[in-house]
Image 1 (cartoon, rainbow, N blue to C red):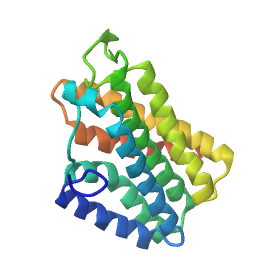
Image 2: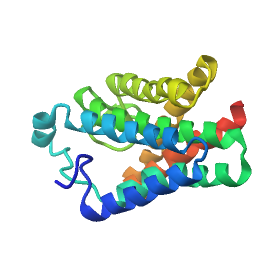
Image 3: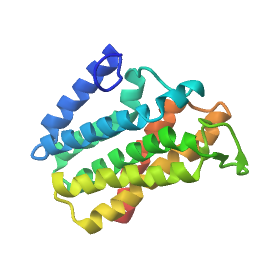
Image 4: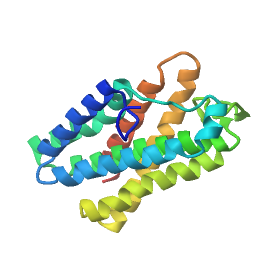
Length: 212
């Protein structure tokens, strides 16, 4: 296992490049924006390693992740940091927070929800843990928790109001839920986990423009 964030060497390199872009183009919030996505990485590792023995028994534990994981989760936040730099529009900052909240919500749902009984969204039938397009009560609560961890942190790092943090927390949850919806198509052979992760991160960002 390479590094503290469970990434292979190329994945770690891409993550470093994206982090550098966020740091530079996120000015004057670059450090805070970088810290926010580092928080996502840190708590994602905790969620991934939770119940690792059980996950290995279920064959649902990924020992190492690569560049596709990094790009599918980090491309939208990185693009939003660049857009913020060139426009100065605070909406891109809020969209950035929502995107990070969305991928965190999805990560918590997928890593913790497998310890509950999952139901496939199309027909609400019981399925095996780890099935794309499935949800569970524990996964839903975990998803909400992950999203709000990011938005609460944003009140300190990026000085957003409590009200704004609350709404973006819900937006992040919806972004994470979008992953499950498109996971239905994934189970039918349309797309893969990387495309659904990308859609998740993009959905949270786009909803910001509908709410604010």
